[in-house]
Length: 196
Image (tube, rainbow, N blue to C red):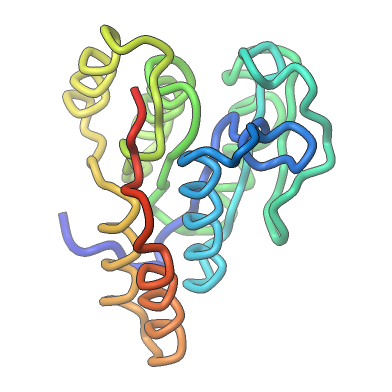
């Protein structure tokens, strides 16, 4: 698999509302909040379209509303399963409309929605990439099984820093490249992904 080209990528954040909303976010802000904001900032710097999808029946999403907290992101909400968001609500259609072949996934929960969307996206012809450091699992004992399932189906594993470095490497102009590398330099705090 070649280095990620931001011109071919679309970012889909799943069930991240709890970590991004100023009203709902844990206090003090957790590592995942920082990680999702970094991923979003990198997507904006690299001109990568950003979609967010939230299933309100997931733990932590009960209070999510249609008011998103990420600028320049397209939001999808459902009171049911992620399948409804992917097919019935037009999320897949809109992502296909970007004419970008690479779908990058991050969010909650690895063994549920991330796995489901990765499998469906692969079946729909996308090159699915999963940011495993930005995709926590609900249970430690199910994490490796979910990772194995996703990888055996053909998804590509990556981490947030790797994705940003690859976008910087393939970025066609110096200003975007500098913006991406500056994001990484300014985020040299706690390591990303220190969760289950």
